[in-house]
Image 1 (cartoon, one colour):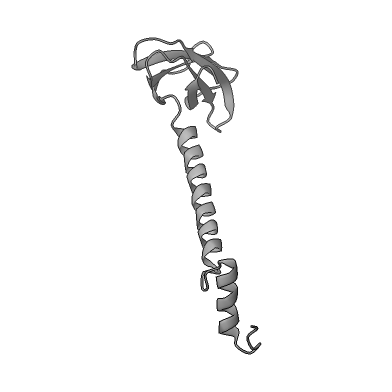
Image 2 (tube, one colour; image 1 turned 45 degrees about the vertical axis):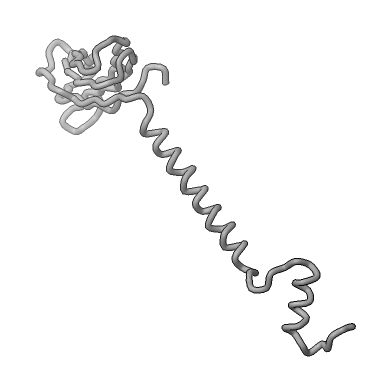
Length: 141
């Protein structure tokens, strides 16, 4: 009933027949698991990137500004947003050495306009030369 020990192929076939293992598939399951894991991680990372970048639509640019007068630098921000979305924009004024000499959180209330230009007066604590728009985000954040 037993087979000779030297017949390795026959023993493998006997074990495969007895336990249901298919010869020659040893590494395929591990490979499939690794590839599936890598794909899952790539999908999750991609989704997180899209989710963080694709939140409520807010796009803003510094449109123009006036010469500083009476300790105030007036800047205009061009804003594109989703309708009925309140927005907060961070504006700073810098001097010739790029040191911040004024700062303002511009609050734009929700409204039906998706494209608008908003004026803001940045209070100065020094010789401000130019405004910088540091970014805009939905007001709820």
